[in-house]
Image 1 (cartoon, rainbow, N blue to C red):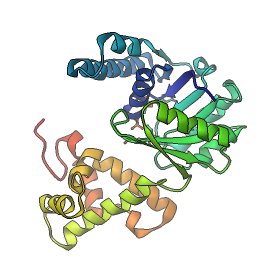
Image 2 (tube, rainbow, N blue to C red):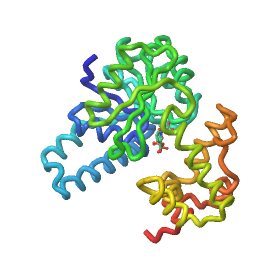
Image 3 (cartoon, rainbow, N blue to C red):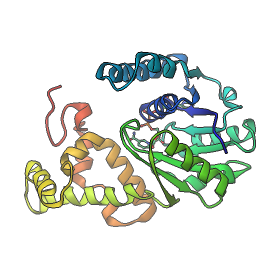
Length: 284
Ligand SMILES: NC(=O)c1ccc[n+]([C@@H]2O[C@H](COP(=O)([O-])OP(=O)(O)OC[C@H]3O[C@@H](n4cnc5c(N)ncnc54)[C@H](O)[C@@H]3O)[C@@H](O)[C@H]2O)c1
């Protein structure tokens, strides 16, 4: 199905980035937040990132202004009724997501595709809140969405081919590299990366290696573009611990459980870059 108009619900870290990708690709986009102020703040952030591209010479001023002009803001879900694709990026909690999908299912056209950006919840459980679960699909973007190429297109138990392929084609259209997978805990990348990063943290204590040396080890010996401690600081220790706990709850695999050292860091407010201190200390 051709997507002419997109709705993005929740314009936080992920939703604002997704909305930016849509308007840059020339797609009319409606962004829904819970207050006008949060919506305006997201539009300012998008405008700021696009201005930086103009300054770097990768985007023209007229294109930048046209892109920002394609983003309409609303606080009413009803304003998304004529969207062909709606991408949800609200809080990572099942109940509000299910409530939202039930509402979207009622008010959008039956052929519209409804996508969730959930990282750790079951797309199938979210889809089950809709009368027509065949049109619900996962579109799992990575943070920061405008820069990370991957989108996992997640097939839930009852996702139809039409919705799945529409989501896949749309991800390509906005310049991403989508991959196809089924709805399993952690999908593809987090299923591999989260236990791997947990192992790295356990090795810190077992081998009594410093974060600096572990990072050097994985970069120099395994070809990682950045070391695991640097990556965890960038992701946010709290975000990683939350995702680990969610995966552990679903799989009961010991490697998924967050190592005590990371839980202690989270409880102490050592969250990485965003708090100024994690495995490393950040001046800026
Ligand atoms: N942050 C990441 O690294 C990352 C990566 C991939 C996927 N995700 C997923 O994306 C989703 C959003 O995560 P985030 O990090 O952007 O969170 P965030 O807290 O930065 O943003 C969520 C936004 O949704 C808004 N919101 C809440 N309920 C709403 C509603 N009913 N209608 C409209 N807006 C609503 C909030 O006001 C907030 O601005 C989650 O499901 C998360 O698991 C996050």
